[in-house]
Image (cartoon, rainbow, N blue to C red; front, side):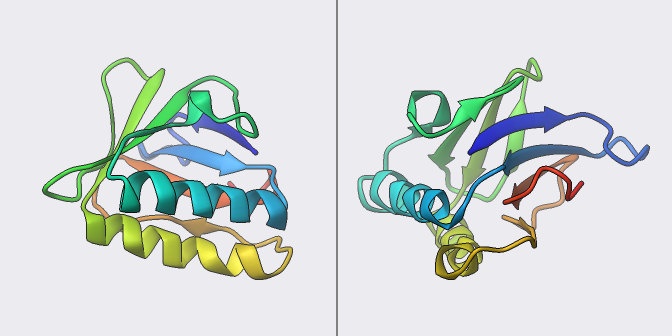
Length: 127
């Protein structure tokens, strides 16, 4: 699994932080890590510290907040995905189909009106 940042992906000043290039086994590992770290322990999940995830041009940190803010950054290098417990619970549900079978589809992992979306895509070509 890899993580990267694509700026101005569609010419409309919309950006994507993308988790991509993974198989079913890595989707399961990621889902379980999200559940254990963020939902159960209520701790931050720093993807740069996860051995099966390779950061390409950025790092992504997941953390709980009192409101769903989506992805925020100050430097376009370190991104923070800030959601409520309910937002992360929904994210886990959106990841679930990738844990059941190999897929070529993709899924946006939250629905918050921000300039940067979070894309979950097993292949690198779904942009």
